[in-house]
Length: 158
Image (tube, rainbow, N blue to C red; front, side, top):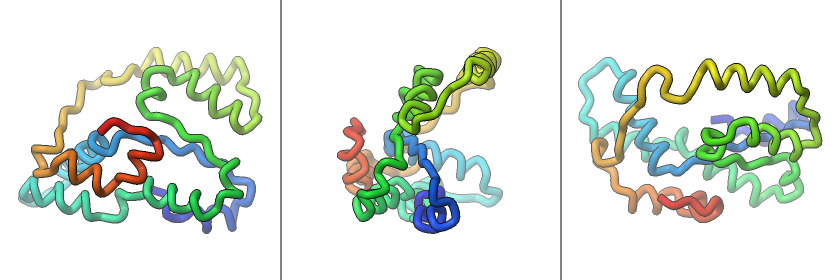
């Protein structure tokens, strides 16, 4: 969500480092639609939710980040890109990758605390969340068109 404010962030924090977690938009848009559905208090046509989410610039921060990076190549050293699926499969390795990218030391204590947290809080601990684009009247083709640059940049299979 902060992707649209990178200039402002760097103005206040000139040494900022950015961890950009990217995800397949076909999955993330469906997930956002599901969250909107569950948090809305009024009767809402599910297809309207899909259209509203797809058209809302708030959910296009990934495209904004790519645009910023294209226009500011001298800031590229501030970014590390993390595949969400890799983060889920190998969280400790992912954190090591982040620390290495930014020249930081990962202490044994911090790593041990992360391992303990992961052990106590496995993914889907409270159940699995199911959602799909079709429920919200959306198709993979239109997601691909809306996020083409993002999908191609990160080589995502939608």
